[in-house]
Image (cartoon, rainbow, N blue to C red; front, side, top):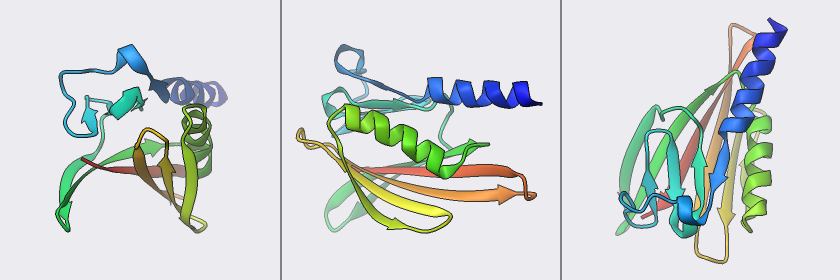
Length: 143
């Protein structure tokens, strides 16, 4: 059981990664971001790949602006662990982090960089059967 859990954790941290520059897919870029089956790529080469498909994808129009949103279900991972890993990677790419709100089981942050990339992340953590953690991560950006 411990070995299986260790593998899950290790695979999760190796699957979340950022891709820069030449690795950005050029054929699907619409507005400021593009989606692949498991990834979101933002303009200027910033990409995030979770190794799993999102459970939801949608486009929202608000006040004349078009936003895109994807939701990932990260089973077995604590919200703060996921946020810590993403924060480390985003900071390495020059993104500044702003906490918008925080509670015991939810967190809302905004990342901005000098190239105009703005990404909002909302985390919601649930515990199933008192043992298993799931983190739902919503990424939202302007098109």
